[in-house]
Image (cartoon, rainbow, N blue to C red; front, side, top):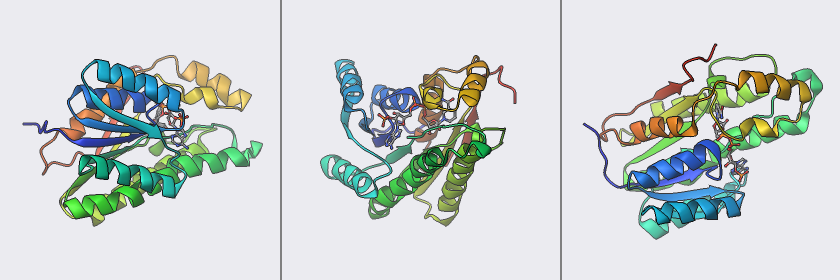
Length: 245
Ligand code: NDP
């Protein structure tokens, strides 16, 4: 039995790829969506299409590395809709390179978006969840949270860390709080387009030939969200069937 009650769902990194697919899927499932990212124009286009299809969505600018902005974003969603039931912490960057290349600014960016962004989301939403006595954090990690390959050391570190934070939160929380980590394999999105290191970029072109659509990850998020209140889907890994490893 699933629980398809209408929920207020905040999604970070909703301007493309998996976050966009999650926002569209949640709206199509009848939930109230509050979607943030830095590219406002992209969000507005998505919002227009979602509303035309009968969905309910608010969009707004959000940089998850800015804790005050993250708190303001979640607070505004809670004030407008009376509650926040789900935070999908999805915003992320994958700036692959060999550690020896010392692309230190890119290391920092991955730590800031992938790890601090998740922590900022938790800092923003946990007080709301506590006041309600319920809530659901869905963290989009990666198969990079389960394995390391050359060029993925720092990216994987941020995703292992995201996995650990979610697991810690799950163990510490009251039963009303659910925590899910969704770990995608290679998924159609803009993620690899931001890699600056030519070697890692070239390797990714080959590696990313087999992909699942972002909607496949959105379906996994929907599965976790729609479970009855007492059922916490802790982790889902979704890979293309052809992906090795
Ligand atoms: P995209 O590059 O398509 O999407 C990334 C999203 O994150 C964009 O909406 C981007 O929006 C947003 N974002 C980046 N930086 C920030 C920031 N500082 N504040 C707010 N939003 C930000 O890639 P994906 O959809 O693939 O990535 C989504 C998540 O999935 C990431 O966490 C990624 O690590 C994870 N993942 C993806 C895999 C894949 O193969 N695609 C595999 C495993 C994990 P904007 O630039 O407008 O801010």
